[in-house]
Amino acid sequence: MSERIAVCPGSFDPITMGHLDIITRASAMFDKLIVVVMNNISKHYTFSPAERKEMIEKCVKDLPNVQVDVYDGLLAEYAAQQNACAIIKGLRAMSDFEYEFQMALTNKKLNPNVETLFLTTSAENMYLSSSMVKQIAGMGGDVSDFLPEVIYDDILKRISSKN
Ligand code: PNS
Image 1 (cartoon, rainbow, N blue to C red):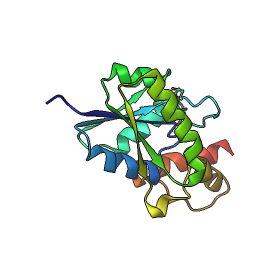
Image 2: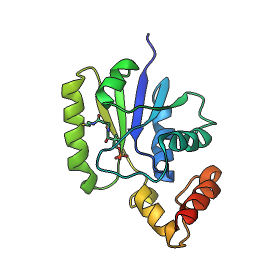
Image 3: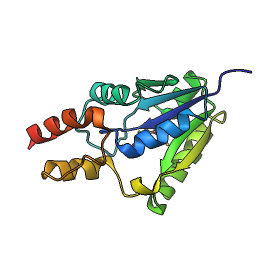
Image 4: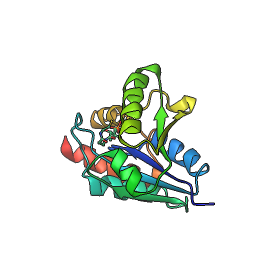
């Protein structure tokens, strides 16, 4: 049987415990999981694509079937290039749903060979988002529960140097 490949796309600006939870769970479901740093046209980023990739790589070093990549183009095209059968997304609350549903249908139209699968977030990460973490850290709050330990110091240094 051919290798089952999935892609897990996102901004990851920066990767949080919520993302890492979804990546870890998805990696157990596929032969290969490609975490891909992409561009969301409605966002302004704090970290460069290369920095976001490097942070993710540090966090997934113990997950042997996970690769990390950067792609500046359409997700549906990237999934086809990689021969992926699935796009993995994490769903937090109902507020995520409408937007994610629209993207899933659009991606299906652009690439009928790929299915979007939603994993429900773990309860402790329901409220977590990269922008919230940046906001709290920028105001001196404690974000140690929200960020993977291996990248915590790097992120704090970067965010405090911007303020
Ligand atoms: O972490 P985010 O910001 O919610 O991720 C959104 C992302 C980057 C996955 C989405 O904006 C995306 O797929 N961008 C790539 C460009 C694309 O394919 N756009 C059409 C999606 S329907």
